[in-house]
Image (cartoon, rainbow, N blue to C red; front, side, top):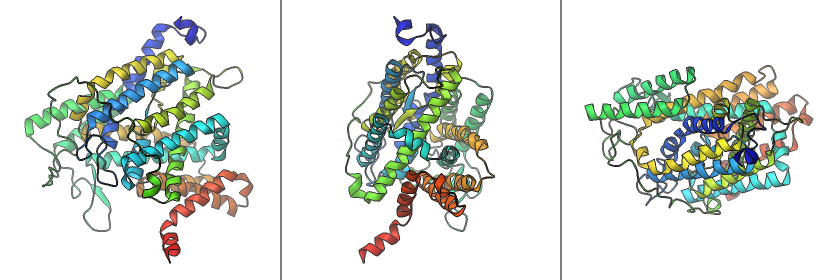
Length: 478
């Protein structure tokens, strides 16, 4: 029955290989259950509230449980409906954008409402066929630049959160190495150990390198805290530059617990438009849409290529279902209050183990559902143990830069601005906007305006309005 439904033999696989591939995919991406709460669970919204619970204190266990739940449900849906060896979970990079770029301007409910709107738009674009037109509008090398820019952005986030890079109190230099130019305290040693360990595991192509790195580094952090009683970086009153940047790593009183899924459904679809201008809200949705869209298309293409899953016409089987479920995943992530869910390139590790069908995704999804009972463990993990994974993922995304033609200024200049401005402005949308506007400008100056898609002119015009919001608001208020 399994063979017939999933076409296992037809695709040259076996049930054993599919199960093994499902396990490998899980182990290579399960880090998101630990990492997502650290990114969105410790960021206050525009009203100074944390996500989950009463809003006055972080609730990492609740976010971890919902992250695992939605990843499990959506990955099983991808496997059983689209029959494709692709796993989904909260998008790394997208969650940073939602936390820092969106929720900081409004409430968490408002921000997740925008995520849902973005997901609904993706679904509509898939059903109407417009999504393909949007994909063709942006030059392929500019898409690469967006991915590279996000990689640089999340790398900076990781370094700052770990305390390896810190803000300066004054002076012309905005950031510096550690505390006053020095790396101080045991937490930095733990971070450096975790980064070196993950680098070694990745180089050795160890399955689950990031997860193993987070677990081992967390164990080291618990031992270090037990031995030296370091304490937090900030206890509510005093600042300790040698302290832990996140929760203090100690052994929890319990490991297993009944998961709390009460985060689900706490959203406001229209609240964002009352907190920021309509143009700003539209551009935030557009930025989410663009990142989510191109990440999924690139991942699906890579997985199909790795597994030889193109049909005789060079098309990916069930591509409409795959793209539709990706849109549903964005909606589901918003409803679950855990940011937009999307496809994971780590699925390629499962394909490398032999997975060729959706059965592998079903296995991965089941493992994620089982993980919901281990949510209390998330509270043990300090920033210094998890943020090395951000640096590694940033490197993986950065590796695509070799595919950009630096001799064509119409691509090279927009790509450069896109990649540089994302980390330097701490904003993904600013980088994307600068890339679009500069691409249109250079092509017009070159006399090649007909090469620019009409949708890019529209998007660039919206970004110009976004960049000029302050003077426009001053002018219109007179």
